[in-house]
Picture 1 (tube, one colour):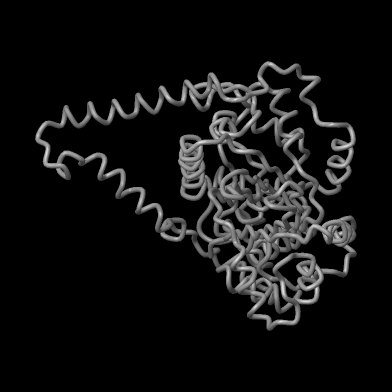
Picture 2 (tube, rainbow, N blue to C red):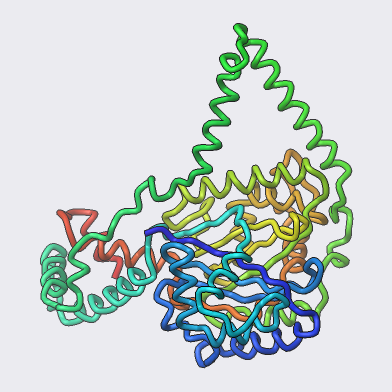
Length: 432
């Protein structure tokens, strides 16, 4: 089963913004003991957040982020069924929400406010919430069992004992079967085929236009690409940038820093909510769409097994253009501290990050689309902090599991079946 993500944006009544902020913070400040939303009953939900974007158009906006298993309608119906009182309390602060309607009407309200997500990344593709929780329990149970084995038990005997233990436990019978695969067909989207058709049309343009000389066609394509590159280089030289601003003048205020840091590192996972202003003009809009589409495709088709550009700490992330593409929204659920997360971006994915945010106002100076930018470490971190907003309410269904933990647990289950010996057997036992 594939995971999906919804980004739902609703306009907030200006007079109700402060009350909504208080309501969400009261739950978010103590997520384990809050009684507003019955998260434990939402069996499809991995991560969720409600955040307030105060600089929205034409006023403050409520953004609901959700990462879940299955299709959007099924998830929203479960959410409304299990958490209807909470949704009424939250969305009664929005200008166009009518409380007292049927559950299906609320589902349709939420669907009507869904934003198009340009880039949606899932690190552990195909792993459902149920599977992740079950495999974590399996790991714990086997570790406890291994403590009972006699010292000096050889590797092959230890694995047979583990298999027998799992096979004899009525509540672990599911683990004896391999997890369902996550085939390519589930990772492909209709738009992938549309892009393929466009590329084929460009490649076979002479046939479409009746030209006989491929050289002329290639010259036309090359000329167009050179013209686009020249436009990019000119804009990179003239677009607004903070590249000449002293680092100490580019840092966010101390009050904002204290507020952001107060929410972080309460658990091994953290959440990032950022909104940047897109540079004006159709060229920047089109370029940003292409870059986000390329990242989305690579992440979905090739980087769904725990790492994105070598970064092993992202659970779910997304970029979406909002407010008539004036703003670029970035939401991420990740392992470790903010400093470590940004450091991984700089070390492993600076080119990709620069390719995206070089299309945003005040990003450190970039050239050739992907060079510079994020590699200017201090200015980039100051920029990232400056564009970050406070997360009022954030939820994780498995807050103490890293991406590495999740994949390690899946590998333990996988190793229960099929032949295994030698180095593979030793490597599997070292997972405990």
